[in-house]
Amino acid sequence: MSLFHSHPRPKKSSRRKFVFLGMFAPIARVSARKPEPGPGAVPLAQPQKGRTPVRKRARVFDAHLHCPSENGQVWQWHTVTKTFEEFVAYLDRTGVERGIINSVRCQLAKSPQEFIAGNREVARYAERYKGRFLGACVVNPMFIDEALREMEYCRKQYGMVWVGELCNYTVPYEYTVKEFELLVEQAVKLNMVLDVHTELEEMEFIIRKFPKATIVFPHFGDGNEYGHIFKRIDLVAANPNCYLDTSGYGHDRVGMLEYAVKSIGPDRVLFGSDFSINCPATVIARVEHAFLTEEQRRKILGGNLEALLAKAGWKEA
Image 1 (cartoon, one colour):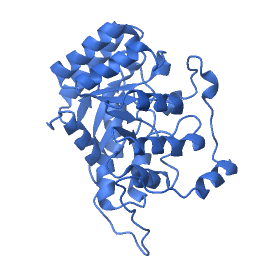
Image 2 (cartoon, helix red, strand yellow; image 1 turned 180 degrees about the horizontal axis):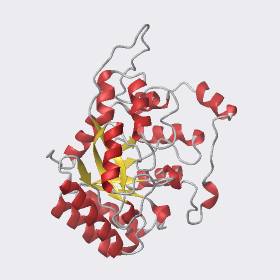
Image 3 (cartoon, helix red, strand yellow; image 1 turned 60 degrees about the vertical axis):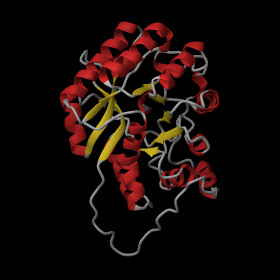
């Protein structure tokens, strides 16, 4: 959800910084690094001489979609997809065939009534487009009793196996609070995947605190971009319960996707676009043109997400 990286966070507002392409010092430091492959890493395909052969693209399954809400809330720099129908039409244009959706209404909820209403919207969309979209449950842990009940209800009533993307800075709250710990324990109990937006220090805390949870971290980098991209990838590589999605800062830097696959291995990198904020076509293009094998591409574009959802008990419609 890179559009909102400039928003102030509680007690941490000074951490958000923007990095520009013209900064040569960070680029030199990145290019000088010679990483070693992590456990289970697969050798990367090398560039081929001559014309690139035409190939059929694997089905794209997007792990990171923020859909418009019925009350008019949309996350977009300038609103061009105001309705869910327009949201779907744009995904059609970019080639995203399936996706996990969460409601902007939930992301901004300051009451249990609001996040419950947003989750019901998502459930209706998932039913209307059965087989195309999977609903994700988003809750605010500061209303912990209602949040825990809502997670269980969404799991049992709607078959939702995904919690998040949780974004603490939109509400706001800290991931160190007891209520968030109870939320994670509920996700583990219900065998749900937890999708959590973090800065680097928060990521380190969550990984250390919750080794039993299955966690997806969206975005290669955070607001510090060059200083944190390698660290975030390395953290996921070292913890087999964690996954990384391709959205946000970093995926467009040639070599970073390749480094993620080499370090983490080919099975824990997920396709994520962060639409309706970012365009999925840009992420697809980077995956398509990356120095990867066809099998690695297939896994990233959808196979890895299918496998993760299956572990959580999801069955394809």
